[in-house]
Image (cartoon, rainbow, N blue to C red):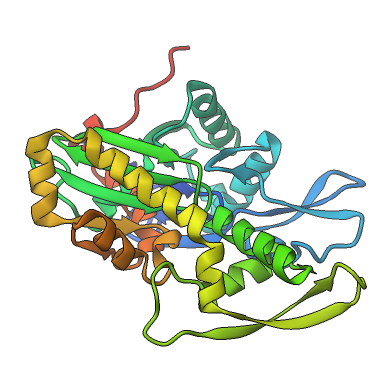
Length: 346
């Protein structure tokens, strides 16, 4: 377990982080998830100092004057801008801990299972520079499975599909290990991009990332809906350069999302092909569990069920599963030690 203080009102110094492309979540032992904010940093380009992190910075995306830049330092689940990740993490850690009263924390960080050694080192270094004493890494799908409460240490096979902002992580887990996995760099961001491209092509209308995400959440779907929806979309007309409003339907957006959605479905099928027959039989019994923000796309569970003939269900609070799982690991390191990723050879 983490350090315990004798001071009244102080809790363990340790924390778990789900460092995501779209959102970063922090879990504190005995308090649960204490922070869930967008992975965004706003920087003053004149001084190169950060002005805001998280939610405040996200509000500035696409709306900043020239001297302020809002940056998303994570891309495809890994660090794209080393310095900014550090700034962001430091900001978040300060938000959740009364830093002055705390020892440097031990930190468990959830990372994509397909991460390279170089990317792994970058995560460790960033988290250490942001103030951690020791850094442990856990693969996102494993953390998600623990967060959902799947029996990852038993010999039965559990299949998890974690769809984040930058990656989709698919893993079959048994006996504290990943038996089969596929990690693809397709997630919620790709869906937003596909929507923006579709609207640009079909309507000559330029929309921002935030608008594309709003369309996905309001009318996006992967499977025909009982009642098709539509919504008004505002953007800049590429021909006249003047703002204009159009109406899009859920049917159109479904066709816009076809490519990223089929990439996710194909990755699930590939993972199933890699699964040993005994464990595949378990998955037929137990089905597939989906986590991550991308799993909230309407009808994606239905489409997956139809494509694989396996019962697919979306976890409760799918956005929080990875952070919660990393937190449970932090609270009982001895029990989950086998599930941590090997440390670097320095």
